[in-house]
Amino acid sequence: GNSHHQAGQSRCRYNRMNLQPLTLKAANELVAVLHRHHGPVRGHLFAIGAVADSILVGAAIVGRPRPRAYQDGFTAEVIRLVTDGTPNACSMLYAACWRAWRAMGGTRMGTYLLASEPGTSITAAGWRWLYETRERPHGWDTPSRRRAAHPQERKQFWGAGEWLIANARAEVG
Image (cartoon, rainbow, N blue to C red; front, top):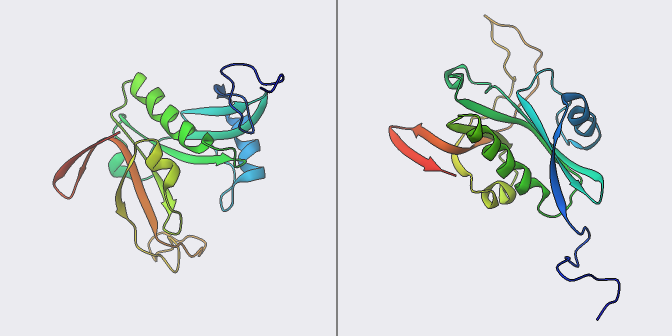
């Protein structure tokens, strides 16, 4: 066998991935470098990092949910998640966010993916697709609440925990 390969170690790119708590500053620094379409966030509830061979390879930032209807104190949203492409880092972070939130007494968690994203990692983490938003060609700009016009494509909403969607209880995660 390979004398450099110790028993129990993986032969993949990294020997082992671990989780660690992150400050918002550290998580936002990774978001600024790696996120394809969003920048850093202002506030959060907590952040988790994925570390492989002492290198921060991913970060998830959890905050209060954007939809006001979900702001019940028991629902959280993964508002940013980035990785450098390390295998399984994304699904590991989604699963860790949900476990941490449940440990704090949370009952459900959600996140939005672009409609063009396949959802492979979030499915692997045990989350379920719940619905899709409509496209907003003018962004969130309305006559009663002016906003800079940033066109928004359709998004998929994924969840873990107890969700009541279209009068059907969905237990996921």
